[in-house]
Amino acid sequence: DTGMFTYDPGYTSTGSCESAITYIDGDQGILLHRGYPIQDLATNCSFLEVAYLLLEGELPTPEQYGTFEHAITHHTMVHEQIHKFLEGFRRDAHPMAVMCGIVGGLAGFYHDSTDISNPHHRMIASHRLIAKMPTIAAWAYKYSMGQPLIYPRNCLTYAEDLLHMLFAVPCEEYKVNPVLAKAMDRILILHADHEQNASTSTVRLTGSSGANPFACIAAGIASLWGPAHGGANEAVLNMLSEIGSKDNVSACVKRAKDKDDSFRLMGFGHRVYKNYDPRAKIMAQTCHEVLEELGIKDPLLDVALELERIALEDDYFVEKKLYPNVDFYSGIIFRAMNIPVSMFTGMFAVARTTGWVAQWNEMVTDPAQKIGRPRQLYTGPTQRAFVPFDKR
Ligand code: SDX
Image (cartoon, rainbow, N blue to C red; front, side, top):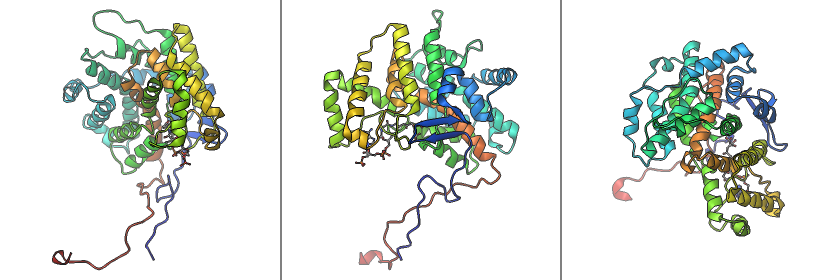
């Protein structure tokens, strides 16, 4: 008897995770948020409409939307003491380290957010997190550039405000390009929630102990940072830049197939999708639209298209059902927006905060919810006699 325990991957010991927020059919390439296909939401909604849907379960009426938008807009400022917190980081710290640190630190600012049994406090904490993430992300970028921090502006939409805080400078008026604002709004929708991915599971597991919601979201940011997860969009751009031209694509595909240096095609493959990630299709279309409307000819798009063409025809990728995922094209759009590669995953975190917050709310309000306690497959030694120090 090796004392082996059974291991249910992805499930806590208290059983499977139930959720009504997002449905994925990986074989069919289907993604629904509260029953609505991602294609319909990305084409017809604003990001805050989708945020409301994820949180509340229904698309908002105009009146509900107005109230929600006002609540989010009026929580976008961050406590002034965060300036001091920022100054504690090196200027060249990765923005995800800064975002993780600041969000975790905010757990010490809002004492009402520790009382998660109070619905009003839960709602305020949720609105604060969704509202402040663009400000925190933009401030992490401005700090890394040594530029003045730009404050949120209530007259701008969520996506416009994010772009304004990233790129405005005090010395001149910055007008947000509507093409980029629309593209950013759609990118935020495409990244908002995705069932029980690594970072969302991290938020749920952290929150299942009753931890402060800001601390839970900081844990989600930490998990998302990894190159196998949200860090993939940064890794895709670095990979495309390293390939450099269409002529080098075949060598890169061969390298991924040979797996000699455990190299993987970044932006390809998925734990669940064994078909084309529906978000990647919308992202590719958005990429073409943005580059065309801005009159930008990005050679990396040609590299990406060639890489996709070759991979989708190659037996290795077909057999292993490896298709482009949400991260494959997003970086090219971010480049067109002049967002630096180091901020790509930060943009993903801004969007995913809404999904994390919705999933956290769903979990902490579930009366049957217990603390998460994943089990293991024990592979260590069976019980044995102790050996005293002088006998070893
Ligand atoms: C996200 O979970 C989510 O929902 C995540 C996400 C979200 O919205 O939250 O969708 C966001 O994280 C998207 C994924 C971003 N990551 C990347 O693009 C990094 C590159 N992709 C991989 O590292 C990989 O595909 C994973 C991590 C996404 C999935 O890894 P798995 O589970 O090991 O993939 P798999 O089991 O499907 O692999 C099957 C085979 C393996 O080969 P064998 O062991 O069978 O020989 O395919 C190979 C893998 O080695 N493989 C790849 C590959 N991905 C898998 N080979 C080359 N290039 C790749 N990208």
